[in-house]
Length: 166
Image 1 (cartoon, rainbow, N blue to C red):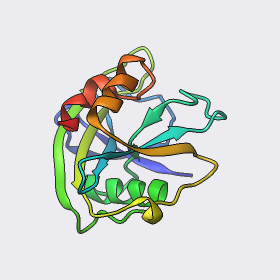
Image 2 (image 1 turned 45 degrees about the vertical axis):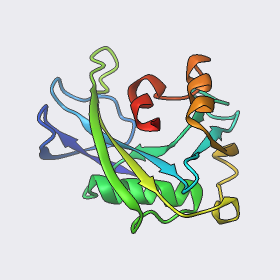
Image 3 (image 1 turned 60 degrees about the vertical axis):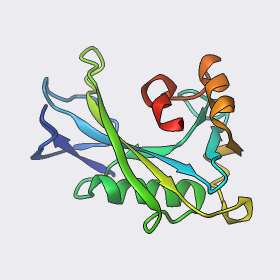
Image 4 (image 1 turned 180 degrees about the horizontal axis):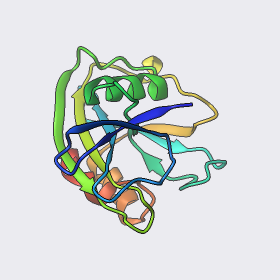
């Protein structure tokens, strides 16, 4: 059972936890999610396509990310997620936290902060490895290719993070 820390409206830990994806949060409670954008030295971005068996957004493109586990910092969470999802270690990469945004979904009981990181890493495709149960495909994409996927509404979080692809 994975636990997530609960934060207040100012992104301060409350000392309480929740079970992952148990959307019974109180008003004013938030959890923390991270997104990790990885750019290679040639200026292309590593993006992945979700497997078709995913319950939410199957076949959509995205960058690595997920929920920060209880006791884990945002930075630790993004490094873990990128490593799990791509095999890349960004812990010593250039870059870091770019910005944070917030989502409030009172009808769903799912309020969260999203810390968006950008890392620049010297890697090539042979360094990348994926979990086949999670990833259908991947590519190194230009900002223009990502914008096109965003305009097709098949790139997750695009409208919230598009400024990072400059």
